[in-house]
Length: 473
Image 1 (tube, rainbow, N blue to C red):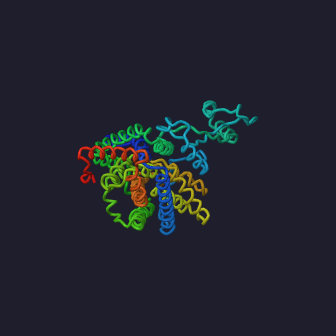
Image 2 (image 1 turned 90 degrees about the vertical axis):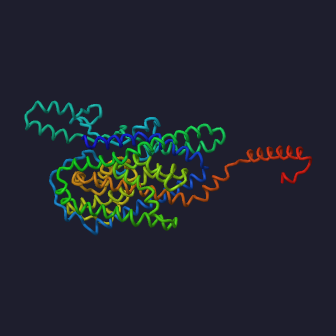
Image 3 (image 1 turned 30 degrees about the vertical axis):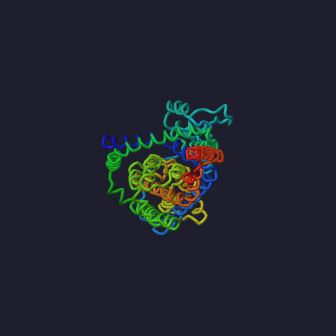
């Protein structure tokens, strides 16, 4: 605990900056663009994100079917993770839509909506909601009886319960809702012209202050990252036995992540931009290392902004619009992991998945990666949804839980790498439009004012020069 403490402080400082950074960066970025530019930029970003995510899923499926790591794994009967509530891909998709349109924008700063199923126990003679009893009361009554009677009453009670769907707010920033709100806010602000200038200046100054605070945190980040990783390693009971048991699974996931990061993403970047992808990777090296230590795309966002804007000179209007969206929906590493793990668990249990089930895993993994929060180990939560979609035992998630801390860091760094390459691609595709927006911000009224002032100056010079206008020309 003490070794991890300096790393925990780094995580807290980075998370502290997420909310003001997303709000200020997106509003200032969109306020400086017209509606056509932002629409085109958003279209390019979404197409790129979905294309790379789907490529990562296909790559993961090909590798796990070819290597077949489940054959080499020794099954362990001890399972610690038991998810009693049913998980549905439809619920996850609807939660995604609910979070896009939050009912309270202030609540979105610290909470988001998530579907939770709770058991509702009913009396045997009536299934009405009014006659339902709480599980706590049943447990208290049963505890006064003998063991045999307790088992009988429990079995009888479990036969008369039903699942009730609830939508409680859970802790964590609703990044998706904030992005949608700030996007609309920024576009509306860009259409107000001179009247909205004071608001644009406010958010621009706020963004500059936050970026200076990010620079202070960056001086401390190497120390925090080192202690974060050391603390995680020390928390393992037997790393050697763990590597022997899940070695081929780790090799499969790491191989997929490396191929995606070294071959697929740089190839797409080079084909579209005709630029050296190694230069971009060197420029975002600090953000990549930060993602490796924090295992959170959102926490790495301040560093990614700074690396792309200062080291690579990518237009701020692009980074402020593309990166917050990418940190939320572009999860290449998570998508690959979500595709590999279910097939690995099926192989361990001797279950042969047909082509239709693999397609289901692909589609569900795509939705799960988009809906996954940009926080450490968020993929484990959505993994249960993918397993349930093809009828695999959700309890087996506990088998890969022990190595998730390591793989989570690698796949998060790939997520950040994909976001950065995406920003470079979008900046290249929109470069002409951005140049036009930068060099032609003057409206007709401003042109008339400039011409009037020019006429006055020319008339003044003519009167002083006794009619000689040659020097004016």
